Length: 103
Image 1: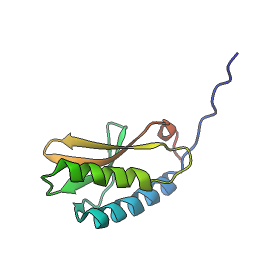
Image 2: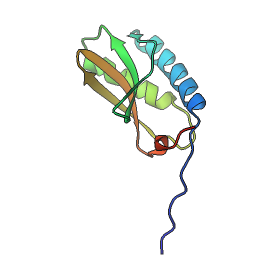
Image 3: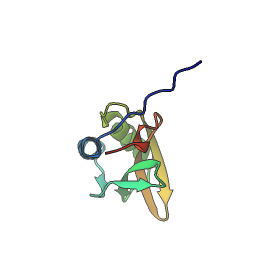
Image 4: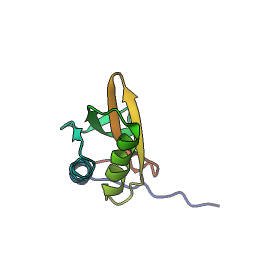
């Protein structure tokens, strides 16, 4: 019989703080402007809107830096770039599914 993995609880405050720091650092390093608000798209993609970008390689680099900067126990952040209407969202998805249980 296999043992079920115990659900990981992620602090929303810790996650928000980590995303804020990661987004600020990524924007500075890549020389881009990000929106102020953290967006959760379809309960899967978490990130920021990238302003005035024409190079999707740069967008992906920003997403990689945000994902690398999210340092929250239980969260396995993988970079993602997504188009939402006319906006480009850069951020991450949680491959560990820890974000299904937040407090």
